Image 1 (cartoon, rainbow, N blue to C red):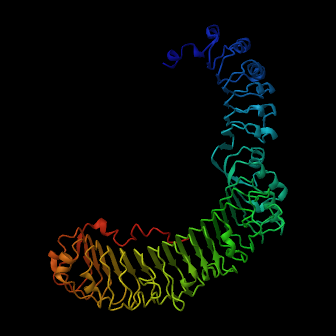
Image 2 (cartoon, rainbow, N blue to C red; image 1 turned 45 degrees about the horizontal axis):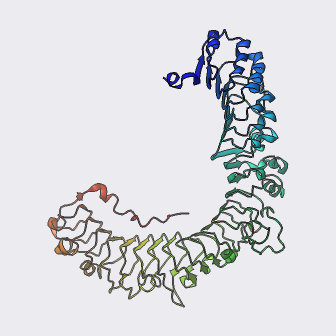
Image 3 (spheres, one colour; image 1 turned 120 degrees about the horizontal axis):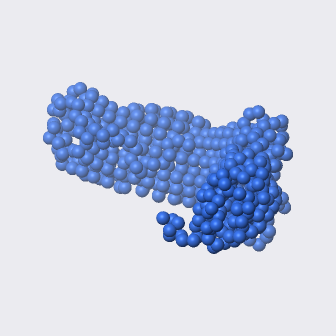
Length: 610
């Protein structure tokens, strides 16, 4: 069908007789393997100078070089060339200026390409998957249109992620002159190489390299050599993301240009630019000896940094967070497992997401006027003073795994209002005793979700006059058995989800609050020994919107109003209440939904761990 449609544009040679029938203006020619093909016949194809595609999946052994040389000299309009088993590619291949696709289908005798080959600047796809190439020529970067390249044991395509073992010299030799590399590169086992060897990668010349990962592993080279190795791996100025993992030295190399004043920001009126002016992401992971990152992390050197992540750098001391306000593009900061950081304040006006985990005393003073999400986890913090924070845009606050934290918001001056905060999660703070300085309507006027869990010593959740929290939708309190609830607690009519799970004596306020919860959709009472009854009309009239009801582990509960009280509720689970007299247990309706009822609501999507 293709041949009929294309007319004289396409032709297939099956045997020697077909050579006489090849149309003069043929564009696409396919030569099938045949024993009776002769050298003169093959050379005669060079007269078809309008050929765009030539596919020849046949090996001609010693005659291959002669045939290929003639074709390269005469068929200069070729766009696609499929060739089997050449002994070599002649220098005349440089004549094929329009060549876009070259495929060598079988093993070849040569181990690199000639310099003449590198003049094929329209080449897009180069396949030599059976050829064991040992290196690429110095001018290989002239193949500026190259999108895909494949040889035995090596494959590159635009946008790929290339994982390289630094000790594998074969990979290094192919990468060395592949300067048109466009994608992501990860190099591992750098602890076993010298700086001279590392320099062979020529990363600085790969101007389309977007993301670079460098990983060290045992055994390490002698002291000070690792800094020289990293110095030799200087990336191009176009780099957008840099990942350092396991770097063993105490400081980073001097990649940046020398400025007269290292604190001076470059501007549009001078020629000084940062070493990595396009860098948007910097990740430093498990660099156990690193004490300072200021050799690289300065606004003058990485002016467009958006995301900074430093994790498990135990000896890190110098991190000038008080000057982060000069990083005008910084949006995400994570510092975790860096207990020796000296800084006691954080100033970052553009920051939107902040994650701090066991990292010194950075929580003492936080000035981030654009911050939206804040996650805090620490083994060292004993008290949190939100009075020292200026976070007017904060919407989500998650405090978790602070095992020595005793209080939040105690003392003077009073906490300034978090006017934008809608989600508060306090989780697994086993020694925390009070939150009453924070959980007030004055501090949290816009709060929608309060989720407190796994705080075994927590006694005070709300103050004596907590207010009504007019926008509160979800109140989730779980595994806080020491809680002492205020008698005057009033829950707002806006509440849609109420989960009370092993959270102390709620009998003083629970029944009275039910009368006000006209919008409640989801109610869970688990492990509440103080509740003896729920009035018969509560579920039918006061809780007319109730869709999910889960009651279990309430040993003193006698009555909820019988089967009629829960008849119109779509999802019901009631069990393990031994004194209940008016309802036979277990009651289970909509079991699949009940399996989800105690999971966080969709609004609680802030990460639960770093």
